[in-house]
Length: 112
Length: 114
Image 1 (tube, chains in turn blue, brown):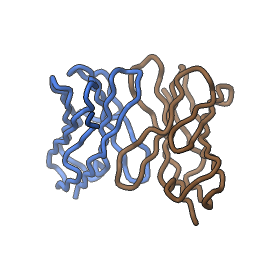
Image 2 (cartoon, helix red, strand yellow):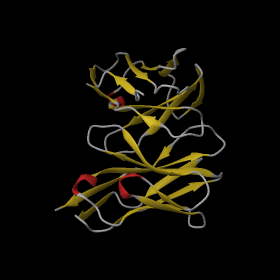
Image 3 (cartoon, helix red, strand yellow):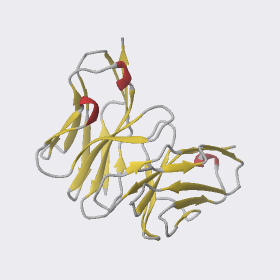
Image 4 (tube, chains in turn cyan, orange):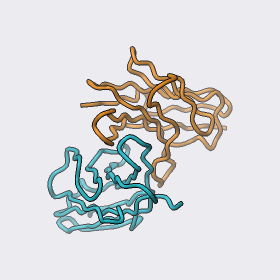
């Protein structure tokens, strides 16, 4: 059973650019959530996808968007990058809404 | 809405000493409670969870936590820590009826010294 994998592990982008982060959910999991963890802080919920539909969103602007594919993998897209978007982005998958969430290793995004 | 307060940002202890990491939460609805651990440059690993039943929950690596509904607390304890327990610990809550949306505290850095 493979765990949650994220790619890339590290990324450097310039302010104003766009970025796509990828997440492969654990086998058998149909729900994927994304979190942003700024340095020295706890993770903040961005949004969640269940069976290819967004079904929950945190307090993030529309330039944060996502997709979930039929195989339940997911992408997080961020447009018009700002310096404050620099953070560790974590993906978590679970089998349904009331079971344990398994986290990936994260993607460290640096915006310069 | 939910909020989580971890009362100590840093906890230094000596090896083999007991430790308690404190967590209080606020919520207008019933919640599930979790403790996660994060080692440097890694993702989050679940230590333990409280969904229902016994208020004393045992997790991995010798950790346990007690749910206190009247005090809205979920403190994490370990009777004897090891150097390898040095990490960041996060308390989190998830509403029982609102799908999966974890709200995390700010974290507690546990440093175990020899």
